[in-house]
Image (cartoon, rainbow over all chains, first blue to last red):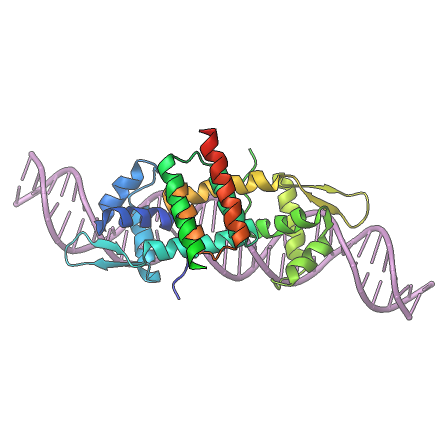
Length: 124
Length: 124
DNA sequence: ATTTTTCTACGATTATTTTCGTAGAAAAAT
DNA sequence: ATTTTTCTACGAAAATAATCGTAGAAAAAT
């Protein structure tokens, strides 16, 4: 079973999910806007992630190209599960209420949720 | 500013939030049902949490009584914010949709959410 | 053709978190 | 009155995460 990505690894995965296969340089540039670390830090991190199986890479060219090996949705689902357990004692509904109440949602967003709820009501 | 509690610290905070001021022995017993660590592990953790200001304690009796120094709601809100950023790139709505879709909600729960949504619609 | 820049590899360092073990005092049990 | 159990304190070890620095090869620039 694949290990859970750490926070730093997650930052890198976000870049890969949003931009597709990328070089270390590119990942570093994207992160650089928020984080200020040396070039070898993301490099090392990507190498570790490769060992863990979180990313795959193509080493044909001198500058290697890394790609996420785990899906965004599945990863979010996993992490969400742990988070609900750790922080909300397992109550997903408490989390939803918090997230909703805490966030100024637009009409579109509210409509989206209502649609989902209706779908859930009809299924049961 | 108080530091964010770590995962182990959160486990302890859950016990304190649910049971109120508690001795190390009690916390240890509660955790013991899930975790198997020596008695001094939660003890040390509580001492560290005390240094950090996450808990307060009463040392009148030989067995010290610890109490959460941060509120459950506020803590959940904080952690939820970071989590949304790290895992859902800041989109609280993505998280809500995932959590909802991923969870078989009861009629009551769905009604609760609908009520909240209506309240939000009326406020805007 | 040299110099400079850009890569990877990878060990080492630093920081943080979690767990354990021991010492010694206080309380409880015998 | 002794022994056993139950506490705290606290240093230290183990585990994990994040960062850095250096070496050397390849590519690019001069």
